[in-house]
Every structure is written in structure tokens, then in C-alpha cells.
Length: 401
Image 1 (tube, one colour):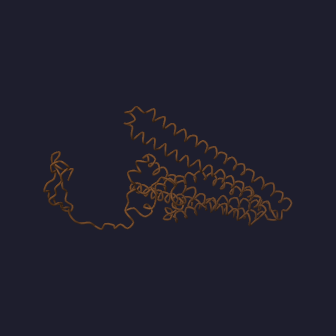
Image 2 (cartoon, helix red, strand yellow):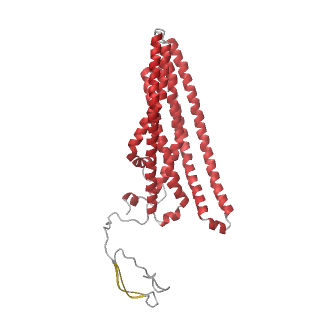
Image 3 (cartoon, one colour):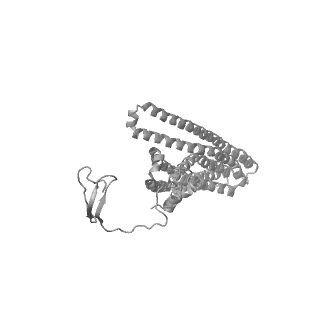
């Protein structure tokens, strides 16, 4: 019996109904605590370099403080080293559980999604499999579902950790010096604009890549599964030309995607290089003319921590391709989920209860038009769990019965 979702969906291969990400999140709900644990462990891991930058800035301030005696400087130095040592010794624990929890959660989600998709395909009608290539369907069940692995690992876990790191650094910046904070992030809007503009084009290209891969996979599977037909009609060269043509189209799209990604990396790298120079130039000017408001220690801390803003932003930029590929894969997956069988149970049908009984035939007679009777005065009783074999010469009526 099909459920209401399947009954109401159209039997087309068009756009899936609803937001695919919102629907995909239903598979994440059972493993949400593992994902949250992985994110928290990852935030601890990402915070170590940020704290190290802060410690270096504090050490510079201690060493530059002429009013502090030698013993005091050494004591502060020991304390900071002990702090970093303790945090570093604890990091393997968090790194281990960050990878373990994220891996277990991802495997669970992909396994559930793949099983549900395969089970749904089993319900679809013959006409669906006539219209769609078996290789393309296999690619969706295997390749497209596997593509969601990157979505969980990169988008839901790593990107959340990157965003948390950026928010933490910005909070510290504005709490210490709003002028240096603004100087540090003045180029962030430009980087966000680049991410939005190029990311949209990368996403469109990535969807095309997924479609071409599906066609390529379907072509290969069909050729391999029907090799006897190919050999019979000596169509090996035709099959090769068809495969090469699709492969060339895929090559061109991927090259264009690579160019967009390379351009994106170049522009963001330039921004990452220029941003610290602005902090050094402007912050150094303020430190010289107003040392009471901006100390050397604070300036060094800002310069070191600034990399923990733009580096996560770069990672967020790089993840645009993965997001586009994963979203394209999810759209293709939920297109299948939104395809309903042509034959299904009505919403108000009654589900059969446990059936017990026997098969009984009494005085059965049957004859084909203008022929003598094939079955005549047939009486038969088959009890539950009884196995019965029908034997006889050709034409005796076994198939008719």
C-alpha cells in the first residue's frame, strides 16, 4: 500500500516537490546529537590555533613590558606555555570523537536514505523503468546518495565550525578595539560578494556535471548489459562514439567549473594577503600615535587572529562547489521519491487481515472458443500449507488451470 506522499505525487521526472534540504533534514534528526557532539569537538579543535594567537600576543606584551621584573616575565611565560600545553594534550580526545561521531552519523544517514530510495523504486511501475535507463537509476541510488556524504561532513559540520570560529574571533576583536576590528574585516564584504557571485555560477555548472555523469553512467551500463546486441550488429564503434560524445561534454563543463573555482581562489587569496597589510599599516599608525589605546601586544594578536577570519571564509568559498553538487544530487534523489507508481491502493482501502483458509474448485468446466472443453468436471481442494504439483502432457490444461 502506498502512502499519501507517494499517491499525491505526480508520475513525472520533473522538479521534486518541496525544499530538498528541508526534507533531507528528516534523516538527520535521529543522529542530531552525534552531529552536535562532532561540531562541539571540532570547535574545540579549531579554537586551539586561535588561543595560540592570543597567547603569542600576550607573551609579546609581557616581554615588551619594561616595568615587569624578570621573574614576573618568566612566571607569565611559564603560565602561558602550561595553558597551551594542557589544551594541546586534550585535543587528541576531541579530534578522535569529532571524526568518530561524524563518521557514524554520516554512514547511518546515507544507509537509511539509500535503503528508502531503493525500496521506493521497487514500488514503481513497469512504464517508469521503460522510460528511464537502468544505469542512470543505479547512479542515483549509489553515486548521488554518496554525494550527500560531503554535504554532511563539509556543510553541516565543518562549515558550522568555521562560522563559530569567525564569530568567536569577531567577538574578541570588537571587545578589544572596534577600530582595529573594523579594519580587520573591511574586506570581508568584498569576499562575501565574490562567494555569492561565483558560487551561483559554480552551482549551476555542478548540476550540469551531475546530469552528464548520470547520462555517462547510463550509457556505459546499457552498453555492457546489452553487449550481445552490440556484437550482433557490430555496433562497437557507434557505442564508443556515443560514449565519447557524452564524455567530451562532461569534460567541457568540468573545465569551465575548474576555471570558475580557480578564479575564485585567486581573488580570495589576494584579499587574504591584502587584509593583514591594512591592519599592519593602519594599526601600526595608531599604535605609534596612540600607544595607550592600541598596544603592540594587541596589534600582534589582531594580525595573527585575522587569519582565522579569512581562512574560514576561504573554506566556506571552497565548499560552494560541494554544496552545489550535493544539492543537485539531493534534487535528483527526491525527484525519484516524488515519482509515484501508476497502480496504487486507494486512500480509503481496507488493509487485509490475517487470511486463513483453503482453495476449493467444484465442477469446473472451461473451453476456448470453437474448441472442445479443456477442463471438465474438475474438483480440487488444496489445504493450507499444502504443496500441489500439476503434471500432464502438453495440451492437457495445466496452463489454463
